[in-house]
Length: 571
Image 1 (cartoon, one colour):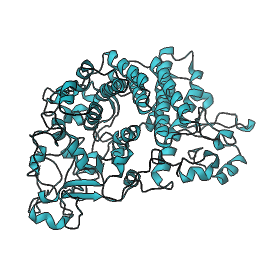
Image 2: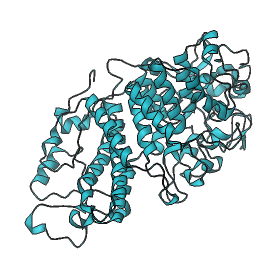
Image 3: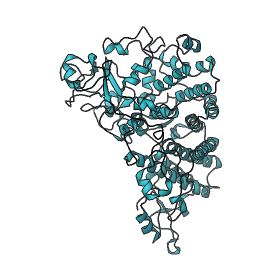
Image 4: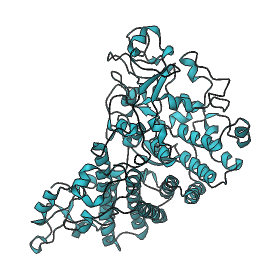
């Protein structure tokens, strides 16, 4: 039987199914299906399926159902959302680029896929929460509370993304059957959805353990519920709530920043196999999508340095320029900064830059680079603009190294490193920003948050008095810190939205200075326009209408099926 998504049924399908007994199947771990029917004739237990009558009886069955809910946890697509903002660009046209540039409408496929994906997961959550009590008396209260906490977290996680993207959305807390009026109901106000999310996360945290044993590695914890609450509260400007939730995570005493003892590699290593939760040394990651070699893998490394095409993730000049010089000053103010050559750009910078952006002299796996011959290079030295299918082409002059395993570049879908959805570093940044926005931030706060991040990589401390002496704005520097620490982790777009800085998305996307490209490669960029300072313009014609672009439009497909949803302003 086929899975039914009640938020993606056409009216004709609804009419068809209303004429006969309906079956609603929720896929869970190991392919088990759950079905139900109201006709007396069919009340006998089927011999070819597990039914609601018999399924919700044992701890193992409940665990399988919870595991099925985890299928809705974002993975690599979490990092892919970096292309929605101004840190990266994939030059060929894509849905993310269209959204980022403001050149899209309500027919874009990504809008509908995000809508339906979240509601598919929500239906699984609702189904579990309606049935788990059947196991009371056979499953311990502690285990039940844990399972319920995991599912409540997931439902809140999914609703948070719906609210981030669309604002007002239908708030459905039960599994819907054919004929239920909620199928054609209106959207709930965004504030109501946010209240629900925060309340769900509170309830989830109450039943979740602080840690798990090795056999349950990667399951949702109390820290994940509190940390996600901090993220949601920060997005909606509920700074007191964000501060309290972040501090609660800090006070758990189980998280610390990852370090291998070497400031030059610790940050980068966190995003490799060495930083996997299963490796046992990472106490920083609070929530991750886990991957397993030859079982469940992703394609991040190859897409980053695809050895015969254009990189799917080219860092922008805007991101590269955001990294401070090693003296703690912006490159526009620091005497240490030079871009006399391509290699000079990477010198005397915040060490997180060279652990995020591919630096000349680094092993890379992208085959031929931009040198004068067309032979493979194990070590990267110059950016490649020649699309001759012999090496990785950059869209901007820059490449990423963060999240890249050079050995996995050559083969499709061979990454098994974790995708980090929530790190302790973010919690520290959230605490500092929430304190700032309430007028409470002091130097001690910086020392227990942002300066810990800087200590990991050997960067000079942020000092409030020194910022003022150098004419730097504290809020801008706090935001800069978040940008560089979380670069390539899918959060920049949401930060731009909540800071109401949509104008950044309307700016041209730029790359390196054209004059830095060697003479033998100039022909490959001859048609590229440049700005008044000679920097490549990679993408222009961008726009951002503050009257509408802070929300996505309700997808056309959903409006067709339910006109009562209405449309967001301006769309």
